[in-house]
Image (tube, rainbow, N blue to C red):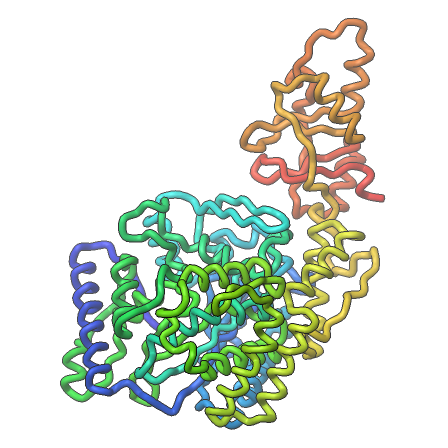
Length: 617
């Protein structure tokens, strides 16, 4: 979709023209398959690398178009988030040293981007979700200034007619109402492509679904979002909800999200997979169409199937079937979309080799797996892996087995056989798959992040711990060792960031509050029980109404006769507040100027935190 000039489907004429070309493309795809025109070999691999850009303090840096212009390389393109970019690697014929060659190109292109970014004080980080990302980084002002993103955002918002209600529950819980698709910009992935022979393609697609859970469990790298510890691979939950076009779950046609694992095994032909998506998901974008796909085939030309590709680009199964043209020949491939970016390029190539090897090493006993296994078991395996990573128990071939046992005892030997069968260098296979073995026996990216994040929070507030974790992850990425070799981070109690501390670095966000109708006696006891000296008063929308201090309580208790028992009468309503991204120095100066011992932190008049004089110690 990124190569097309897209617009919204607004008029009846637009819709009729688009549907005509879409149905024509389906007919053309059937013709290509029936005539044996789809490329049946040699097989090829390819990948897309998404990455984040951060400043010297490891906060997101929204300069993608500026960096892209300076890189000046067609391998690179934009993403919806202005602090993200994507590079598209070349395709490599499967065999020999194809994986190490792809790795070499990946390193070369990333180094090119790093050289350009470094001149502007920008660093490149490979991670599924950037740990230092905040809610303030995912509004529409952070969207890349490209028409296609605006059109996509407007079309999905129009379809929903309501805000996105994000709810993800892990160790912590995230509840968020958001008004755009920019939450999708939190996700960065390493998308892997495997071209397959059209013969047996549907069975191979079902196999890709069957192995998705175990493969993902070893590769998770996105356990944190906005400082909250959620799923081992939080991208799976977030992406599903962030581009959901359903206003509710009862729409007649769209009973599943556009981002999904699917509802059942695929049966029938390759085109039936595309037909199923067209049936379930309505088109809301179009582009300029000039050529007729069917007529092109009749004239001996290769069609691009632009209408079909455009629709396919707005449906996001975790294993997506893609049509393409390479060397003027039609190709079919599976795009693996569930693997996160990072933690290092060597980890990513190891993930890719593991997946490709298992795809190609399928034993005959797993042929026609849709006739042997219940799809819901496979789907449950996938979401369990996203939640629990390497701690997952999989239901595999009729029994429960740990991820460690399944990967070591069955999937890795299967991967070796598949790679050798297609002539992949034993040296390459041994090098990269050993990384998977070490990771399974040690820790993967999400486990490393969680352990170190928890440790950092023992001596730092959550926001600074997010920032420091990103910095430490970047340092280790630059050394190039796989994540299984990463040890515990070393840190001190002092901040080392160039711009100094912000209010968000030291404020307390886990704060108790009361309503204006609450009993004063209750408030007094809560303050006593929890040793609280300042109690914010808020309404049901978390808007700050007032503040009660221990001084107010003492004055209240000192009265001979209690004149009231209402918080609204006791609270102070003339309140000075501060923004969470203001400097700690300004906060301190403000408190000294007014002789305050506390300072509420607000965003759009909603209480988000509290600073007290003790926070400056």
